[in-house]
Every structure is written in C-alpha cells, then in structure tokens.
Length: 65
Image: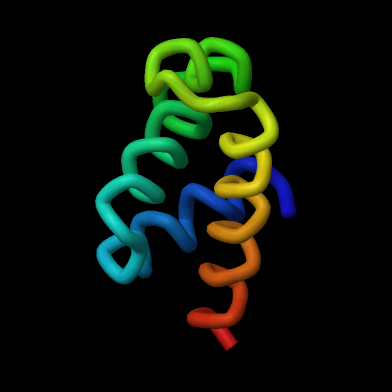
C-alpha cells in the first residue's frame, strides 16, 4: 500500500483505530517522522512501532473491504 492510499483509508477509518494506533500512524504518515523517531518519542522499541504500522495497515484494508 502506498502512502497516499494509506492516508485516504486513514481519513475514512482512522476513528476505528485505538488512540495509540492513530497517534503512531499520524506521526509516521502525516508528520513524516521515522520509525526510530517515533520509538524514541513514545519510549517504545522500533519493532513495536513497525508492528503497529503493519497491524494498522491491515486493519484499514479490512475496513475498506
């Protein structure tokens, strides 16, 4: 999924994500922070940020279907 497709789905279905998921995806896709920058800011591992982004992408695609 490209960034534009994700943002379109995020605008439509982002309210169905948890607050933490919305914040992480907003920082990554709208604020253009890197996974490392988000991890440092949130005090979590880079893997946790990556996992969250992957899960959110999958969830948004499922909502669209």
